[in-house]
Length: 439
Image (cartoon, rainbow, N blue to C red; front, side, top):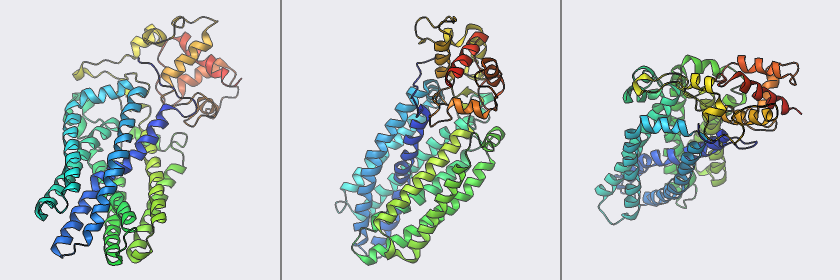
């Protein structure tokens, strides 16, 4: 086991959630915006309307700054945060999909080169060549999404991979196609939202009206189709994930309401700007983006929560303990080893003097055990933001939270948590530590 990145109050999982939710905006904008760009630029050439190119130049600059500066920084933030919070999980993804990641990076490089060439060759190459460069970017960025979605979907529904260990058995898993179509649809809604914001700054009223109306239609189509594909995606979820999604303790009722509410606001905004394009203003447009970000955070939180207690379904728990043997990969569950040796002896980076539990160090040893086995999903403080352990124990209905024996029973029976891994003495130490949280 690796060192634990345990953040007081916030929790490491929420740090990942904040960064990843924000990253969806610039990444989906980068993936979808050039389809709209190519559409508008083609219209400009065919209808001999060079004034439309003013919008394209502003829109591409927005993509360059937002997607390739803030998007790149948040992308690095995701890699850093998931690596330090769940190194075994990211190691499994890299080892299983090393060629997938390598392929995605090829297309990412194509994106970077294409957007800079596109931006700096305005009026310097012929129209057909410029459109081709834009199309290369659009296709390359979408292929990048095709690859990333397979790996993300694999974590929730590995499908046949659990038996075969095959690259494509895990990649083309049960939720892959509906999730890809859902993300593709919503990416057009993101592109439309940003296009309206950029167009709202244009001085030419005719161009402004044309862009906003076309973007609104793209946004309506993306939002409606994305919502329909979400229903398909939900139906394709593993049975265990559906059961978790029905537990209000794990999926707060407010989250689906926020998702639905953000989609409704988005639709109302797109319909309004379609009917009254000159009513589109910069500030309301930015507010719509912020509302969308809130909906994205809620949707991503739901997706992460229904995967619990696993980081890779039916293979690795959120605390990095391997739950089941993966014979094709020559990987075996380490639960029995940990139960025999104890989690404190099994982990390499336990503080000196805590590998053996005594009456004097029991509470301190219990804290280390909680950090190793619980902190991926819980904060240890009662004022924590991420399912604080003290509150979880209270919700379990224990009449006397000062009773360590009762807490041991709670550890043995609470559903949708990984089984406790370790010796009976370590389980007692964890219970003693949990009791101390109330004093």
